[in-house]
Image (cartoon, rainbow, N blue to C red):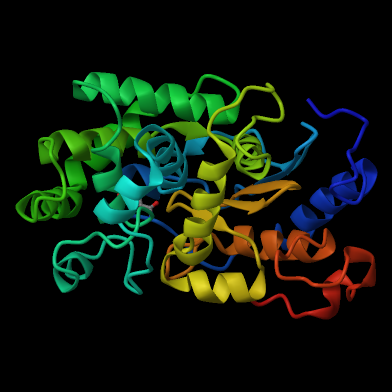
Length: 335
Ligand SMILES: NC(=O)CC[C@H](N)C(=O)O
């Protein structure tokens, strides 16, 4: 796991380790928010769970709390499947077919598709993610699923497994996603059977990861597409740039602008309570806590990421070097 070395991209091994523990301790007692319940399998999540990890591009990982607890990745899969599809089919195809602009509406909005003439607008909302998954290489849904599972596992540096219970639970209750996929088909935005696209998309959302996995997956995007733990190239550096740009504008649902303003990092969240935030050229923060705010973003995850972003000087818009900027606590904790 973590090595006692640092490239200097972040403040130093011991400092990052200490800050990870502090970020966890600082917000562990915050019980604001609600567990997602529109997928019955998610409603059973333990609201007490809270884990985080910081992954550096030298391959070190610093964890705190429930950082090894597994949970379904949900919407965070959208970021990595987008990167894989971009790598496979090129960014022009996906930009035209799916788009890169924020809808300003909730992630499962049907009206956003209608308002934009069937254009999904971006790959981080359900419509765009289903259209993106439909573009995954493979002659059959089984082949497409294998490409996704293998690709996501390469980002994590270990074999990821499907959470069968969550998958079946969502498949029984995802009428809205089925409607979105059929709407996309009616507009000629997906070429495969819409039920197959939704099935594969639901599987990708049901892959089990930990906060530690998210930190490594994010650090791979921070590292220009090379997994810093395994040393394997997963996607090209150009694909990382494209993916991070999309995450910056759309990764935190309709709160993406506010997030970028406060925290200054491209990020992606999911309704099971995960968040991954990426500091290009430095590393990534993975957090997990199932209590969500009204937009579906983890409350503790946002607070801990904000704290770490400030303390580690990760904001991509900061013009002063970290040692010249104000102390971590100088800005209020509200996200
Ligand atoms: N925001 C999310 O994490 C949503 C993912 C979930 N699988 C859905 O499609 O509704």
